[in-house]
Amino acid sequence: MRRRELGRTGGTGGTAVAGLMAGVCACLALAAGGCTDGRSAVADDARPADPVPALHRAAEALVEAGSSKARTSMEMATGGTRVTIHGEGVYDYTRQRGELRVRLPRDPAGHSARAPITELLAPGALFMKNRGAGVPADKWVRVETAGLSDGNLVTGGATDPFAAAEVLRGARSATYVGRDEVGGTAVRHYRGTADLTLAARHASEGGRQALAAAAKGFASPEVPFEVFLDEAGRVRKVEHRFSFFGGRDRGTVAVASTTLLYDFGTPVDVRLPKRADIYAGKIAEQ
Image (cartoon, rainbow, N blue to C red):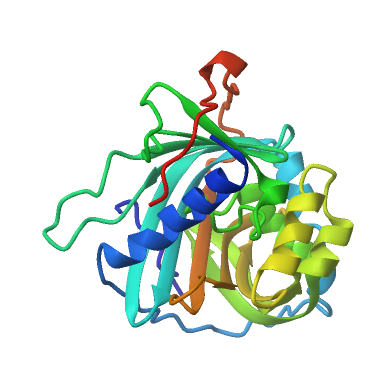
C-alpha cells in the first residue's frame, strides 16, 4: 500500500513572544482550507510485541543518522476556519540545528501573504528573518523557546524536526497499525498518545526546557500522534495534534503538525546570526 506524501507546495521579551504567537494565529484570518486523509492500514504479520521502546529511541536514531532534509506542514483550525503553513529545509541532529523556509498561506484572492520567513532552529532559541512587524528586512529576531508557552512546537509555524521526535519520548502506549510506505521507503506505522511532561523528563538537554514549557502551556499535555519509522528506527513522517489556548475571543486552537524527513546524511551547515545582526527593537503587534 502506498502512503500519500506531504506536498511540496504550499524586540524582544514578552512583546516579541506575544507578537510571534499573534502572527501565527493571525494566519487563520487569511484563508480557509482543509485536508483529507484517505489512508488505510494493512496489518503486518511481524507485529512488534511492544512498539513503545522503538518510539522512545526514535530521536537517538536521528542523531545516529546525522542529518536530513525536512518538509513541514502545520494546519490550524479555529472558529470554523482552517489554514496551512508549509516549510522546507535541512536539519543537523548532532548539533540540533536546522534551517527552514516557512511559507504563510495565500490570501482569499490567491496572493502570497508575504515572502517566506527564514527560520534557524537551535537548542533553546528560534531565529526568524523577514519576520515583518516592523523588523528591518536584514535583521533577525531571536526568541528563547523555553519562554514560549508552546515551547516552539507551534509558534514558528513549523515544529522543530528534532523536537517532533523528542515528543515521542513521552509515549506511554502505542498501537502498531501495519506496514506502509513513505516516499518510496518501507516503514512501520504506529499510532498513540505522548505525554509532554514525560517527554520533557527524558528529552535531550537542549530540548528539555522547551518541552516542559509546552507541557504547561498547551490546553493538554497529552499529544495524539501517528508516526512512520523506517527499518533503522528513524522517523520518516510524524503527525502531531496539539491544542492550545488562542487568547481572548479565539478559544482553543487545534493544530495538526506534520514533519517529513528524507535524504538522510545530506550536508548541513547552519550558521547562527551574529549579535550585530539580531534586532533589539520593539516588534509591532499583529
